[in-house]
Structures are given as C-alpha cells and as structure tokens.
Image (cartoon, rainbow over all chains, first blue to last red; front, top):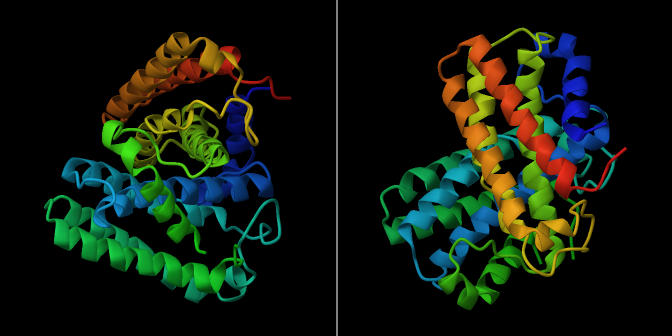
Length: 156
Length: 156
C-alpha cells in the first residue's frame, strides 16, 4: 500500500476526532506523530540555520534569501506542536522530555514565544535591514535554546 | 553542543559552496540531507492527506482548512529536492532508489510535475469550489504516486 493511500486511510480512520478537533493532526500511529514533529523541526532548523549563516557574516548577506528562508521558518514554526499528542511521550525516536506533557502550560508558552520571535524575524526580513535581521535572528535563536534546555533531551 | 549551534557551524563550514550555489541546502553530513528530505516529505504528505480526508467526504469539507493545508503542501513541495545531493544515495534511513541519481532528468521532471500539480491545487483551494479541489487533489496524488513508483523503494 502506498504511503499516500495509507495516509488517506489514516485520515479517514480518525474522522470522528477531526470533527471535534479540526486542528488535530491526523496520525495513523504514535510513531507517525513523532516522525511528523521531528520532520517539521528538522526543516525549520535547517532554514533557520541558513539565515544564521548570513547574519553571522560567514555567507554573504542576501536579503532575498533571508526572506525566503524566514517565510519557511515561520510556516514551519506553527506545525510541530500538533505532533505532541498524548501517547507519544516515549515513542519512536523522540528527544522530547516528559516535561512536555507534565508541564504542558510552560511548554505551550515556550512554543508561543518561539512562534512570536519567528514571526518578528519574518516581518523584519521583509525590510532587508541587516542589523534588524541579525537582532531578530538572535532573539529567535534564544527562544529555540530556551525550549531545548527545558524540554529536550541533552544531545551531545 | 546544541542543534542550533551545530547547524550554524555547519552552515558556516560550507560557506564557500553556498556562494556559488545559494540554493544548495547546507548539511553537516550526508545523513542530515536524508533526514531533511524525509522530514519535508513527511510534513507534505501529512497535510496533503488532511485535504484528502475532506475531498473523500470522510471528514466534513472545510474550505478554510483546505486552503491552509494546500498552502503548506505547496511550500513543502519545493523543499525536499535540495536534500538529494550527491553522496546521499545509500545513506541513513533512505527509501530513495538509485534511479534518483542515474535518471536525474526524469526525476527532476517528476518533481516538477508534482510541484505544478500542487501549485494548481493551492490555486484552486482559494476558490473554495469542492469539485475543482477534488479534481486537483486527484491529479496531485497521481503525481506523488508516479514518482514513488519509479524512484522510491516499494514499502509494504
């Protein structure tokens, strides 16, 4: 069975849920929710780093490239949290700490802080102002780090 | 070392490359390119399936939700191909067949066909016309399948 077909069946299976929770991501099994959130974070981190290479001056600053990447980062920033559903705490290849669930309000606040910082970065990116972009990138990076410190396994 | 810091360093390390190939994704190691492309496909497939649940009638049709998801799908459709770089053919947890590299032009054409179909789906989504959306979703799904048939390991 193809992945597309599997996903359609999956989406179908939770149709009842989707009616009451339209924002809920539709996953066939807990591992799928973990893979989805990891995928979204991976893509977000990659494009965020592309901006960082420019704000640090290691790659020539390209305002158009910053805009493209900031826009992708903002889109991605909204997605992964749908994957932190109940029953996915110690599932699959996850780096999420139990505090994601035991301190849900704090986790949500940290997510919101990141989303706000990334939205600001995307707004500032459109001005093309290198100094403002650098500052907004730094703030957004701090919001990533703060959440990683509290809610992600320490990676070596 | 944090992922963010690692990615910044990674982006830095390939600065020379980035100058001549600004569109080239910046990956620290081949496995990162594989994880990135898999992540992008995963997110794309998830949001595509959310539309499919509505076009199939199993989940109530919600024009606004279709629009949000079609927009994410189109954004994602542009991304994964940057991860199919040389040296990532049999690396990590990949389902890519060798034909991705040995039949590069055919692979690119299949990717373009999907991107065009998804762009059309996103345009049609804005009309809110359920029948047109259903047709455009079907065409986009065929473009996914065609590429999977030729360029992806058969999954059970």
